[in-house]
Length: 358
Image 1: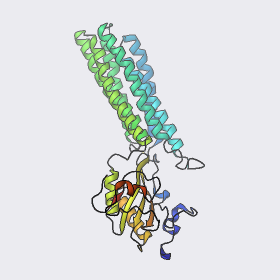
Image 2: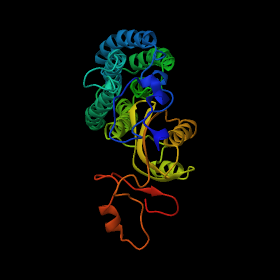
Image 3: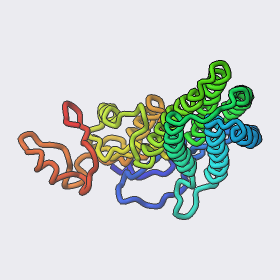
Image 4: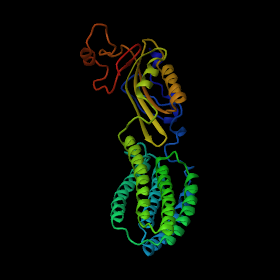
């Protein structure tokens, strides 16, 4: 077994880690940290976000003025939404700065999740604002004010052009970042809102039906709810360490244990560090006499090629090295097996060759 000692040369990108408790302790993927994008990267161009911010800030001031003059809640709601658009872009820019800082001290991943905080804040502001606007729209459906349809229509048409330009700017940034996607969803919802407002203005101008303005506001509310719920759900999954969408931990565990010389996989965890950066850790038991490092490299190749997981930490040990091995002996109860678990505090299902519970 001497040839299976813990060899840090297999992942020298990580530098020296010091000794581990297991002979074949934790080893990371071949790519090393240098090969990871680690969340918000340089192609999420700050210049495009700044250009979009300038466009919507200038137009927002104009829209508030016209909305008050025309007594249009639809325009004022659009302006309020544009305010959240501006805030979402500012948050995105700040998050990019924070995420670019290197890991240090107690922040072993750096501040990569600053972008997730930003995305969650964007989602919450959309939900709060939609509740306020829904209340006000219902009130105006019951007691409709006089609305100047011509001003509403003209302003909304200009707003469509401004939002198209802003959406185009943000589309040039890296939308794989949940942070940038949050700002993009803000602007896209606002664009649809301006289209609804333009239709409402045309209806008011042509027919005098003032309630069209409140109806347009409710359309905007529905769009805001949809975008807000999506952002809160996506950011919540990351904060709760849920497996990334599209990655099934049970299926991954079964693939790993089906590899040659692998006997068991347990303590399998799959999570997202930040947008576009999934991570995995697991404890792997292999047949006695197997080359632990060769098995580890094979498993990491599988994870990288089939699941695009490049940040994988696998602790590989020979089955039977510990007195409390987890291999189930025929005839033993599940409770007895659990009592003799390889790890004192094992999490999640144990994956073995052949049928097994999940």
